[in-house]
Length: 263
Length: 242
Image 1 (tube, helix red, strand yellow):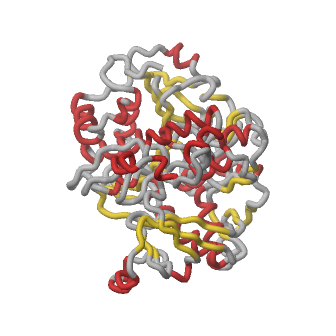
Image 2 (cartoon, rainbow over the protein chains, first blue to last red):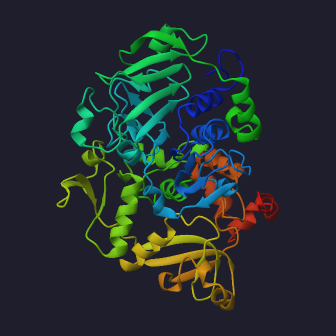
C-alpha cells in the first residue's frame, strides 16, 4: 500500500491522525489502547489545536496527559512505552484506568463488518483458527461503555471489511437497525470509521456502514472494490478535507518529531 | 506491551493454556510462536477482555467467588469461554458478566528496587502487579520478585511510602540487573527493539537457535545478560529526563 496520500503530502498514518483529531471536543476524556500511535498522535494534535483541555488516558499504563499546558513528549511507537509519562500530569494506578468513563475511544481490528462489529481474536473457526489475532484486549469493555468510539484501518480491503466478522470482540450495531439496544449497553456504539480511502458513518435507520467522504483522488469504485459488503454511499458525498499546512506542521514538529507516523 | 513470556513458552512447547486479553508485540507484529501454536491447536485460549482479567484477580484477591464486569455483553466471548457467565444483577437488574477468580500458582514480577525482606519499589507505573501479588498470595500461590537492585532495609524504613509491594506479599527476591531485557524497566532502560527483531527473525526459523545463543549451548552456563553484552545494555539506559 502506498504510504502517501493522493497529494503526496503525508503518510496514511498522518492522514488518519489528522482526521481523527478533528472528531474530538474540548474537555472530553478519551483513550486509545495498545499499539496506538495513530490515535495517540490524534489526541495530542487535538490538544495543541482545538482542545487544550482534552484528557488522554494512555493505554494500560494509565497516564493522564495534558501536554497543551507545558512539557513536551514525543510520540513513541508503543502506547505502553513508559517514556510516555514524561510530559504527563499524572499517572493512574493499574485497574483505576477502567474507572473512568470515556467520552471516546479509538480502536482498530483484524476485521470489521457492515454494522461496525470488530474482530480482534481469530479468523476462521475460533477453535482452530486460520489466523490468530492479538486478542480482544479492551475492545469488549470500551465498545460497551465508551460514549462513542472511532475505528481506523490504514489498509482497507475486502478481507478486512467483511460482511460478517468471524468473531465479535467489539460490539458495534450488532445485526443493524436497533439490535444493539437489546444489550442495554451504556455506550452508543461506533461513530465513524476512517481508512486510507475514505470516511464512513453508520446510516441512522439501518446502522449499516455508509461512505460519507472520499479522500482526494480516490474513486468510489476503488472504495467499493475494497469493501466486502454492500456499502451505502451518502447522496452528497464530499471529498475529505486534506490535512492543512498548520495541522501537518504541528503534527510533525510538536507531536511526532521522531517521525513515527512517517516510518 | 511485548508478550514475550507467552511467546517464549509457546515456542518451547511448554504453553498449555493462555489467560490473557492480548498477546502481541505491538508495532513489531503479532507474537509469532504463540500465533502458530494456537493455529495448530496446541494452546487453549481463555478468550477475555482486559477488565475480566482485572475482575478475576480482584475476586481472587478478595477471596470472593467471582468478579463482575460489563465488558463482553453482546460479544462472542461468552460463546467460546464457558467460564464467563452472564447474569442479571439482583440489585439493579442490569446484565453483567461474572468472572471466576484467577488464582496464579506462581507470580513473577519485576521491580526496580527491593530489600532483603521482600519490600519492593516500582519506580513507575505498577500496572496490575500489586493486584496480581494479592491474588496470588490469597490463593496460596508464590510471588517471586526480580529486581534491578537491592536496597538496604534502612532505606525502606526511611521512606515507606515508596514501597509498592510490601514484604508480606513477596516470597522471594532475585537480584537481576537488566532483568526486564529485551523489554523496558521503568526509569532504567528502554525496550531493545533490535533484540526483539532478532528474536522474531531467529525464532521464526528455529527456536533452538535462539535458545542456544541466549539460554543454553556449548558455551555452558553463561548468564543471559552477558550474552547480550554490557555495551549493548548500556546503550539502552535512559538519559535523565528522557
